[in-house]
Image 1 (cartoon, helix red, strand yellow):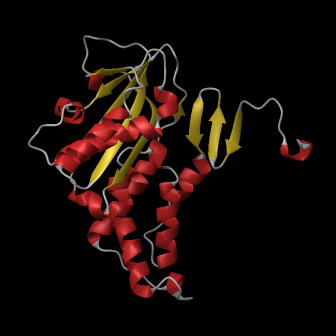
Image 2: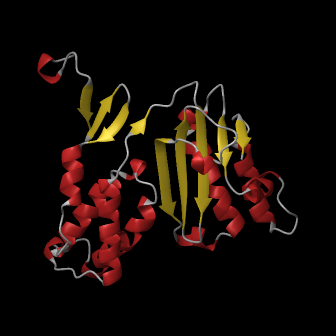
Length: 245
């Protein structure tokens, strides 16, 4: 049942879960962004945890967020293990960040300040998916190009952000081969971004061509369990119309 006290009529923009949604797209609440950007360097475990959790909420519009936040998150996890989760005074324990962690903290605040609004993709525009990976992390950036110019490189096109995702490899994933790590964000995009990628015009995928070769035609020199995993991943892409660049 709708309640009048909780309803608003004729609004061009509405707040939902800390984000402002309108007919043109989604952007983060400016007051929240300003508040996070103005936070001083954490002095307690509670302040560090607050910053890590609050900034992680913005990751969909912050490219390279996880790489910048990695040191801060690692410091928070290390402190939690050292003090113990059940310690009543754990959150008020003082914490002193290293120079590298302070630099990481400031990098995240800089990213938060320049967070971009996310647009709703148009069915007539070109949807672009770009993926990459390193030894320790991966990233996915999905953008829209309204007027694609074939004479220009992809980095010279006029992009508008749809969504971005990223993460770090953990535990056994750190032992994956480079082939698997490079293929992972491609398959991650297929599985987690199914709704925006299932479109009549298809989308453009930009990655290292060698990654696609390894996914769809694994070399016999690879170990059998690696070839099997790549082949399972390849099956997730058969439902999409993809143009590779």
